Image (cartoon, rainbow, N blue to C red; front, side, top):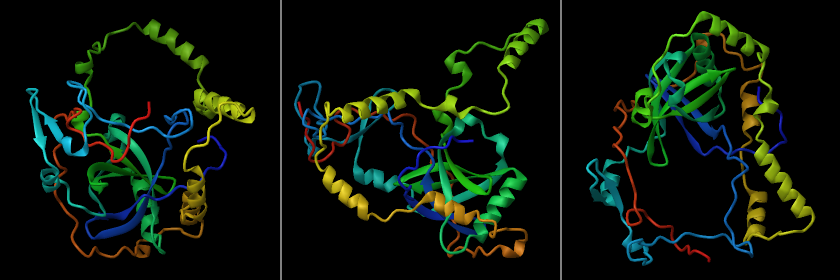
Length: 318
């Protein structure tokens, strides 16, 4: 079980859509299930002003403007092919708010290496009966829904899992993103004697525990950085005020955010039991969900200084 931690700011739902399969339609909100490590630091100058990036051509050392920068795709033979924004828009996935599930498979059929990034799915709208019914049914049958959805103009493969009445979405890596043991050069399986296996099993038994100690999973390096920063802040040493911090704090005080834990607690209350099929109130979709296969990914995309789009109005500080 996750370790109890200090409360953090409420988590925002950054995508809303609908789980669809057949005539089933279940509205959901998508929440990030992980947060960035606390070891990340911002690059600032001595006065606390954030630094920006400026692209330049390494061949002649000249700085590039937005008009000088285009996108390029490197082919397998090493040639660079320029691709325009209009051409990319023509092959972009259709914008949709559907998580289109095409199959339900046993959970153990998905190798762990395919899992990429986890998200929570929370019921959206007033009724949560369909959400609970799907979660309960998937958990009892041990099935995982496989499909795709579009988020921020990118199409993702996704697996929908159910644990303790909560639906979780896991984006999946594409097959061409994974190395095989043969590509890495791992040795073939070798035979070992039974006596050596027995001896090693005894060593493992000495360290065997029934539960994971979550304190062993804590990020000690991040805690050390935080302690160092807080110590220096108390002493008033090397403390700078980030430009625009006052405005950001003022905006944060008036922002309207959704508390994920509050949503899940309400959705998983004892009163919201699902026992019979007549509680299923999912209405048919207005339009039949798309049945197109996931778009085939290109071999490898490599950008150079002249093939990437530079941030606007940002300059580097020396």
